[in-house]
Length: 296
Image (cartoon, rainbow, N blue to C red; front, side, top):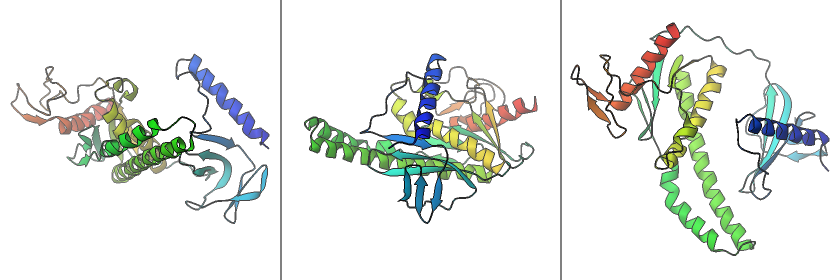
């Protein structure tokens, strides 16, 4: 028995997927594998009461463990299934609160952030946030589990068990990364009133096969997404500079080092003789360029 509204939402999602494909914004839509992961949306008639989730066709309620207390009016729910055989429900609530007003942008309340691979981020104040390399630290164990799974007979229960072990490790790595990104973005949002960032094209950078795994591991795209929505929640300004701005190559004297390569972490300016640390210089320049663009 299926809720008719959930079927209608699935058709709307499919229509959106095809529209994005024909507009060139996404790849061709793919089917959801039942064995991998799946989800469905319940757009209305969602009730949470006495530790139970009540949705159409499940009037008796489904017992749930609450992550936190619900605030506001319950609007809809999305139930999802993970490859490690866990079910989650995400509940959307309307708090009926207005977004907080954002403070005036000044040089004193602004910070520039340069994202990197060697260090996850470095601020214009000189604070370095280490890259914990969650995937790299577990890649050896992951290869072993994947090799074992590949040798099992297709369709057998042993292959399913082996694939589940791989999925459990993938989930652990994803949870570690998600926890790190949430804590880092929360810290930066709560400590600053204006954050200056670079507009990165992560999808294009992933085409570099030598750096694609390292870039995926640091998850710049997800970090930027978190920074954006948390800035709206807490009233923080987000300023961005163009992706082709020479933030790493521009010395404080204004001279641009066009010969700088990716392997050069420290370089000396030929004009003024100052020795520059690449990432710290980039963070300072991101702040300077962003404030200059903002002021017009």
